[in-house]
Length: 263
Image 1 (cartoon, rainbow, N blue to C red):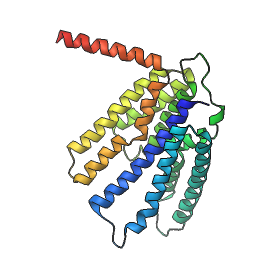
Image 2: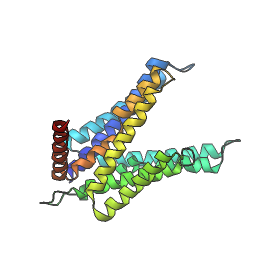
Image 3: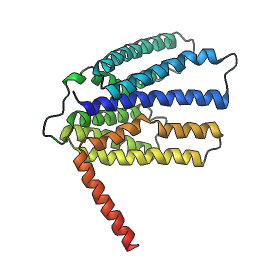
Image 4: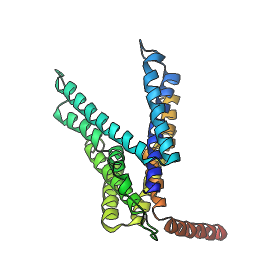
């Protein structure tokens, strides 16, 4: 069993659900309930989120591949049923934005990193780190596929946001995933991960700096950074080949101290 990959999956599940739970609690405390809504209406969602967070923690702490497989199988079924119900309701509407919008929503439903997590989890028992190998190939391939899937996910929305930075990050995400899968290249994943982390921080910080929508939206942006599943994957790339990561970290430290002495 690949313990590093198992732990990454546990962290991803917990962090993703923490994001949803904290955002929900922020909305309730800072914005308030919608008309006719009370705490009893959101209590089931809170309990479900807490249960999923506990699943992630148990998977991480107890290295429970069986629990992860059961949870993943349930979530795949839930996603499929949810997509079918959404399509059925959408097609029954008298007025709708069109089939293109429906296809986009269905793509969002299935082309995302968590569908990758759920499907990979079903085969977790067959994934092992070869003895004597520094590189965790299973973790490398997972991170590469996530970047690839994220890139294709961006393509679905490219018509709505076709700014130059978004197009560049979309192309870079797809390219990094393809190169890493084809060449088992850890360096390209790390390079894209660093760029992606900087992009995530810059976009959120810029939103907070220029925010005109109030404290709730600022808090929401902060939650988006702290509990970001994408950030977890980016950090995980540095554990694919720990020795290589340490080597480049030492290089950066040496450059930093050299620059500091010159200054």
